[in-house]
Length: 90
Image (tube, rainbow, N blue to C red):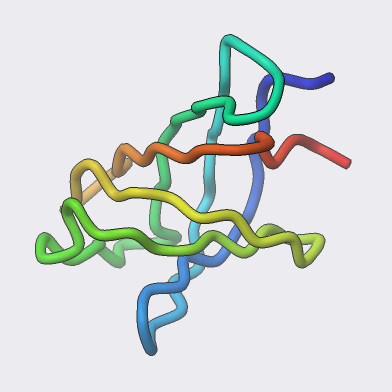
């Protein structure tokens, strides 16, 4: 099993759909696995500070969706955490 995913995705937060690049990883495998990584908005777009601590969904390029908790927000990469199967490269 791969323990790393990097690629395009869409951050889904309520009514907003933000194109992003993600880098997600885990050091363990199995059910209930925790994973984390970064989400970087495309271009100069920023993620809103009011999202910090909220949950959102990531839609990967192949259509798979996973849920994340946003640990920080603002300009540049934003840290996220998720649980369950890591959205690895298919």
